[in-house]
Image (cartoon, rainbow, N blue to C red):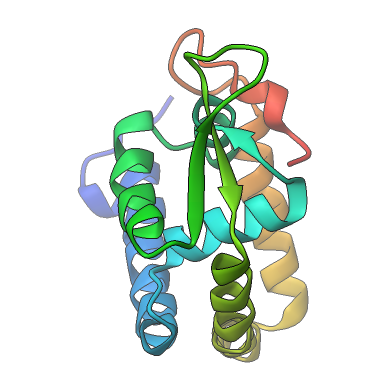
Length: 156
């Protein structure tokens, strides 16, 4: 096995640097709609799947609960999501997309599409699709913190 000697050769560094770079573009384009990339993703996930518990959403998005919490607070404050106890377990909290959240998501979708288009124009639709496939495979793989269960989320 070869030794990685510089941060530029580190897989984690390369993926995180690319993620920050891409996120900056998406955040810039989504800003006029009043959303950041992660917030857009939360609203889109709730639109697609319906109400989700905080734990389920955190697992699906491969994000820790603390970071998710920081992202949902402004969404709740702005009336874009509603947080309620679940009927089956009053201690568990479920996130619901509100009508205002649906409208904001719809307004932001055009800007998100622009970001997607810029990425695909720059890298080509085939390479973009291959990249998404590889990144989903990483998330679905056994590579990850011990016991994180990431492989359970392969097709999300």
